[in-house]
Figure 1 (cartoon, rainbow, N blue to C red):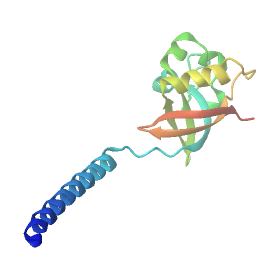
Figure 2: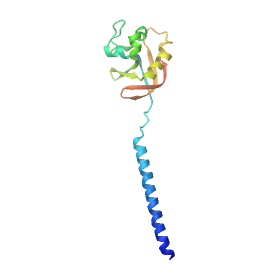
Figure 3: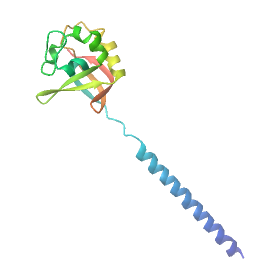
Figure 4: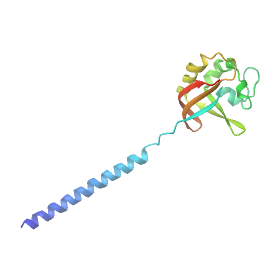
Length: 147
C-alpha cells in the first residue's frame, strides 16, 4: 500500500522538478543571450573637431584641411554656432591617417562645457578621453586637455 502511494508522489515530484529546471534553464539562457555586452572603455587621444568641418573636410575659418592637419583647426571655428550645433568629435591618428569619431550628444556637451568654454588655446585642441565606442560614436566618461 505504501508503495502505491509513494510511486505517484515520486513521479509528480520528478515532473515538477524537471519542469522548474527547464523553465529556469530557459530563463537563464534567454536572459544571458538578450543582455548586451558592456562596451569596454579605453583612452583615445586626438583633436577636437566639429562634425560639420569633418564632413566638409575644411574648417570654416582659415580653410584648414582638418583631415590632414587637425592640430591647426582653430578654436574660434569650433565655437561657431553651425559648427557647435553639428556636434563635436575626435580626430585620432591611426597609422598614417586620421579617423574621425563623433561624440554622442551628452559627450559633445561634456566636451563643450569642460574644454571648449575654458580653453585658452587658439588651435591645437588636443584632448584625451576615456570612452566606449559603438559604430564610430564615442560615449565619454572623462575628458582632459593634453599639452
